[in-house]
Image (cartoon, rainbow, N blue to C red; front, side, top):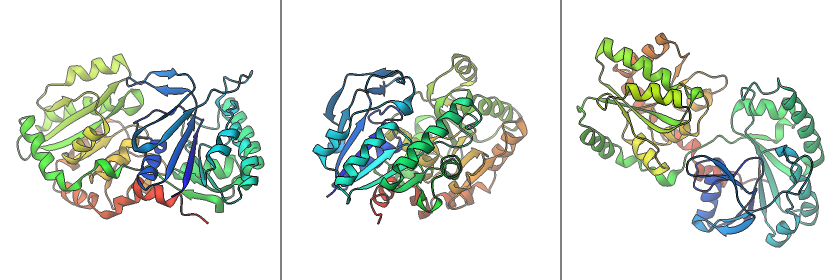
Length: 388
């Protein structure tokens, strides 16, 4: 058993979400390790609202301890990277064997130096989630100043870190080019899926349940999309073109949408199209319900930006239809991905025609390959601990 500490200070930590810091910690705890998360006082509510809570310490599922720390008062408190959280004494009391820093370049990491010098056997790693396409990263003055600061922190703390993980190939570029991190220290650790809420053996049962519940024909093709429904996800374009496509071809495709609306205008557009015959809206779903929905479906389609739902769908053995972005070929682990070139009518029509053809059978077969376990958080949680 190892004592493991995760530092989550570059973003709010929210219990029961499906982010990397939630699921790697979960699986490490399930594997018998003693896991503690040190984080800020910021978290999201069930509706997605960002709130600030008082400093506290408590235990969540699987015996994971969460310690929320108030940042030290400073004139730079509005800048996340520069906030300072006092962790030195907490680390000395826990005496971790392994520390995982979520994010790179945080001022708080400077405190790791004194702990490491007294505990040279402790392994420390960090990960990077910043990629070049994120809000045109690198083009604004703010991001350029952030790069300068991160390079400085990296230079001062690099000796601490055994590995720096990157979640996409584009994140590798940021870490190596923008922050001067040595390539030999960088390793790929993609976002993954939670094995504990996916039972592939139930696919046939769950598909039949959906056909029965929604009164669908047995030859219906169940297509699923969802998540946070906003402008960037392009779900409103998907629905618009699907309605046009259905009116023209009378397709077997049935579209299911889940998630919460983040834009009233988009909500209005989508609600007008919902007919509960060929387009169904299921509202907000928890992770277990999303798993069952994916397992019972034939296709998962996401025409917008990066989402943790991509890997969730892959884990459920569902063909993935996603918008073509730079450097996302790694998702096509077993020829299980169809790329949508753009969000114009022709691009969606081509996708629907493929879904409504015999070619889909091969894609469905490929999606069930054991290669999908490359994205397993159960495996990733072990991988990060297995370092020299």
